Length: 156
Image (cartoon, rainbow, N blue to C red):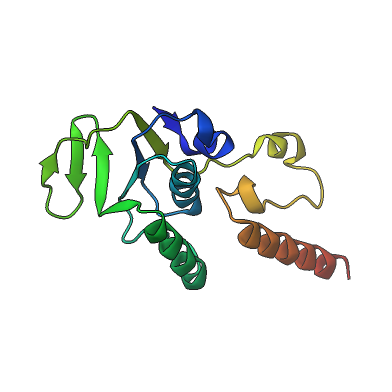
């Protein structure tokens, strides 16, 4: 068992067949599945989100799904991986894990907020980006620009 970041960083080191357990429908599960399939590994993607890539922009998601299909990646919709096997989120139906050598967990991101402890309370410091929670580059940029605009408005 390993996390998606390790699978993406070194897909050649991952033994297949692989089950990618994607809880949130983000890009890390899709990228792990795609990177592994490009290495010739048989991949099944179990996605517990409403749809694979559900957190991505529609056009990005469509491109990912086309590539996953082209690479022969099987997708189990609305399915989470539990300690006992697979569970369908809506019906509760359970079943065994497919025959796999490796389970790759794509369980989302964690914020990198260590710097905030040193900055908190300093004049003009505003929480934005990963300090608030895991963010995409677009979200963090928007929050940074918004914080900068608020700071400038406070000065004038």
